Image (tube, rainbow, N blue to C red; front, side, top):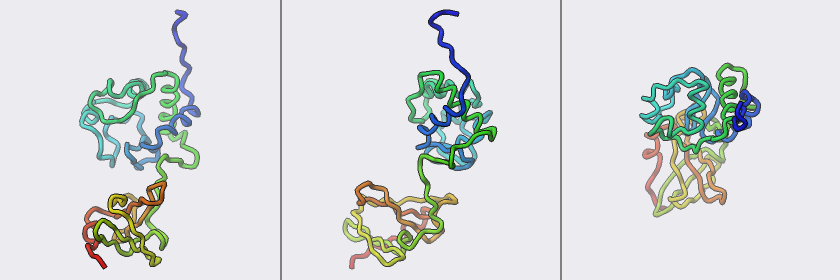
Length: 212
């Protein structure tokens, strides 16, 4: 064996689980729970671009003809843009082989049902908005000038500069019930929030253009 050859040990599932925490901002390993990127549950031997329910794949990935396994995942984790040009994943790659092997071992164990993340940990804590408290459930939302006025079920009215209030939708099982939008904080300074609706068609009908 040449002196310069690097010996890489087999992937370690526990090390891979720790490394995967860096991926949690975009991916879960819970089946069907998609974030910015698709769930990586059951990824092993799956055709790239085919996770059920995930609609944001690039054409490059959908048309790549790649099946995820140890070899293809290693190439993807090393340099995804080189492996599948034109894909839209924002990821610099992992140049060291051992961490890649550890991550791959973890993903295989997850697919085989042999490993999960402790406590079902995810990078984005997706709050269950289905049964909000009175301080969070929105009773009315009106706009006047450059300000949104949010009145919650507890009777309080909160004022936000229009640029600091986001209108979002969450159609998942964690999202609000139809007709019961929920306000959630998004800024560290307390001056930003988001109102989450069950579907886009609720937004315009719920907001009143009214000055009092």
